[in-house]
Length: 337
Image (cartoon, rainbow, N blue to C red; front, side, top):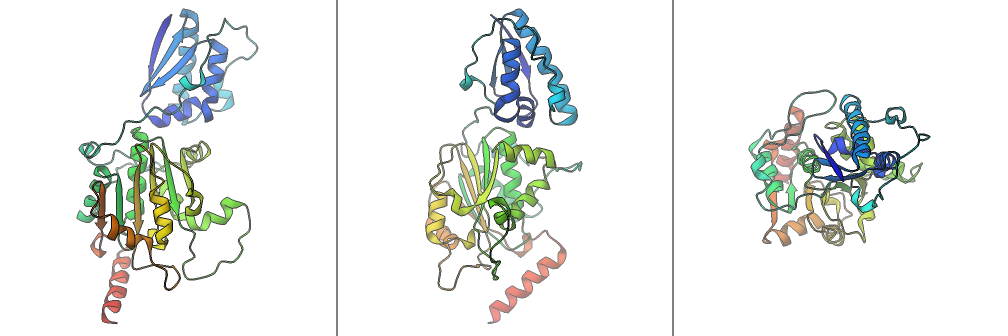
């Protein structure tokens, strides 16, 4: 049996190259008779000399297209379904992996990487770095702990940095997927019945998470992530009953969860997963008399090993300069009353 090895640059390239649910890969195996196994960043091609040669040629051609256009169209596949095929080797589904097995998280292992190696999207050059001391502490906490609870004012980068590090973990193959969650709580006003399907109804609540992702990843890549369930964005109620392994979970607007909801969400954590909960304890939209699960979790869980609590302040606000002044004005008024 002959073997050839093809090196991939990163996780995104594997996803684009192999297609949704590995459909491109299975088509190639059917056409060439070769067997393909993905391990880490290496694609191993197994078969006889002719099978391996033909399969390697096609994969290299696909790879050039992906690196230029970021995706494969049906025309790019360029396989002739009518050509005579050599005798096939059996393709075992469990051996064809579009997402490599991730390395398990271990305390401190991620922190040695330094700043996130995540380039911003939309053809902008640069890296996402902490802009304040508080943000630096927050990012290090995410790298070093399995569960992080971050309390901070609007504009302090709580959600944005958590999404950035989640994407970094995905691309570095620490995790298989990202799950972004928000409680569907209206901010002081009743929206009534919303038109459309389920996604249209929850879109107003998950829009901030989508905005953060689109700011870092181009639209086509986001679409592929969402269609392949590599990234899920959903309301908190849809988390019940799930156990998520090898997953980076972010709960945004955590101050709007009840104690029961927070417990439900935190207990979704599976093996080799990580959770970040963000919230602003000064902007709770729960009904009067309902305790915030976010504040309760900070109080209960802070002493537990593997859990970190981070408090960001007005000094960490990096939005428009007026946002810091606005937050300060409201805090001053609350202290007087």
